[in-house]
Image 1 (tube, rainbow, N blue to C red):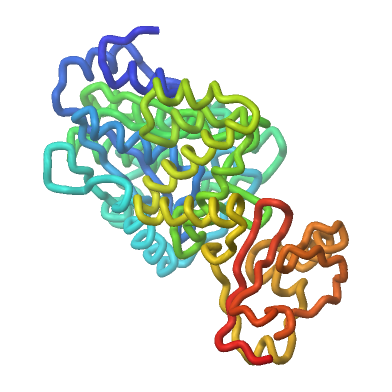
Image 2 (image 1 turned 180 degrees about the horizontal axis):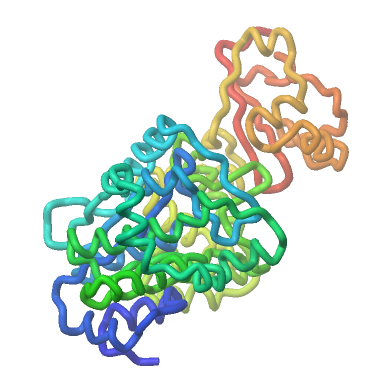
Length: 420
């Protein structure tokens, strides 16, 4: 489909466009306006965002490239409730102190990926706690709640699915969609924000905001959703056996982040290049047409470009160089390292514990299964003894050992001065 505005044509070609409340109206608005404000919200349930948020972050970047102004809305207020959309059970209620720490941490991550300068397209960082924390409950029910139909709210798939499974939906969670709708109204009034963008699981919440704006006689508001980040098997991206794929380099090293994308399914390469990188379409078409072993070159491009956006050019190149040295040149020196003390080595560290402590395996049970299945190597030698102990002899006069879990997960275990 061909649109009048360059932005809609671009996001359609790259695969970002999933649903829109009034695509013709938005197309016309984008064509006529040289200053459009749009927002994307992120709740602060953890100290870092993960790769499942990358599509929304890329949308923020693309808005800026086309001359529009994005708002990043951090959910310092809504996180106190937790979005029930498509969840099997209620989120754990976080202490306010944890939410505030998470908010600050997520802000630092986003500032590396989106421009927050004072220019025309410089993003605005807002926090819905600034207005939600000050709401007077009775006034809110009269002014906002009166415009919502419970029948209508129960009809949304995000709620209906939970109720159909006879899973509890608390009154607290039920209020979430009112608060998100109110966010859109507040941003519209304060910044003349006309567009909310979110993942496809946010459709119901977005529609509620648009309908509320209409009832309050605001200028027409628009909603646009992008697809969730799924792999070729239809599984949500963002989790591995070792845990979440965080965007914070302190929670997941850039090397491991690079490796995550280096190891994606061949079928996902073209789609991920479109959604998660700035690589031009013509180049993507060439890369996704590669066959057999050559497809690995396309995976390296994907991994490097995604890592650049999250961690910067330097870290991306270091990760790429380390991987090439380790896997192609058989040089372990550039692998990410995990430090242990001389005292630990002197006592002896069970291999099972080390696999778990380095996060190569998510649990000791998984580590034992790896060893029993001949999937663990120390210095490229298979170890199948679950009682194997790492000691000074394991280092073979080197300052590190190479610890491997399977064919693609490796780490350098480093100790101080090695004693014989």
